Length: 343
Image (cartoon, rainbow, N blue to C red; front, side):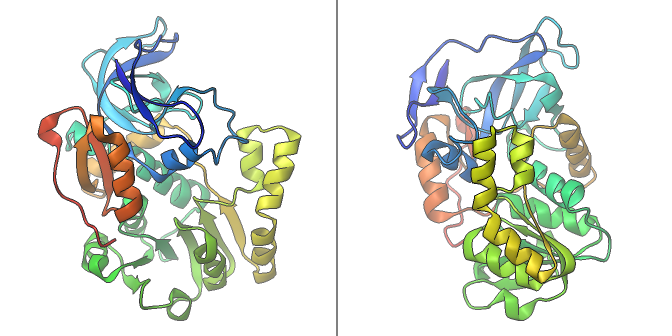
């Protein structure tokens, strides 16, 4: 099969020919139809996670996909060949940038009935981030005020829709070119990050979902009410994440140090900082599929490139951003020439 492999941290990913994955007892083999291209994949390629997740290189990368079940492990029983599924694989396995993907059946879900397999590939990372950040970790309630940075991106576009469904008042930061787009998704307060300062426009926010990190994260702590929470998805990682990841004591100490300044600042302001690194969860994806079929959430696809152009898809995402998700597909009929360069 064709696959894109990371041979060495910091090196470009390369296309290779390799055998199909060997199935474990509780795994399914899925013929990949489409896969999402994510900033997290680039962070993995650069070696940012190498101290936390000791991946064995070379490895097939890619963190979300949709496709068709073609075979099952000896003890797998939840799916049958021919079913169309979508998933976020476990970090230890990854493998979405390949013609075939082996994955634990508990991490799979049937694609929404109201979408095609292509659109379903745009959901796993964004939907799990939104669900685990807003519902599970943030416990967002009706009537609360939430700030979602980068509302026009893959994560932000789903998070806005989910937050609105939960009854929150939704604020978001985007460029002016995307202001009307995020209003259509449900945003109540739209701030142009290029010309406006969100810290001057907002206060008494209950929950922030930060997709940017750095100075944006630091300044977000100041708009949250006492007792509120800021959840970062780009770091810095916190001690709770170190425990979740099961890292050794030395790495845990390093992780504690990385977020020490942010956590101290949060404590001085009477707020909480949490780091979110999503985990595979087929049950969460089934709930998201139900919301898609109920008309609550719609996947947003910015552009679709051919599977053979995964490196170019990364370059496109990193240099131009995206309104929704950038996907790659093995089906030439899916490929689009779209894109929103002003994100």
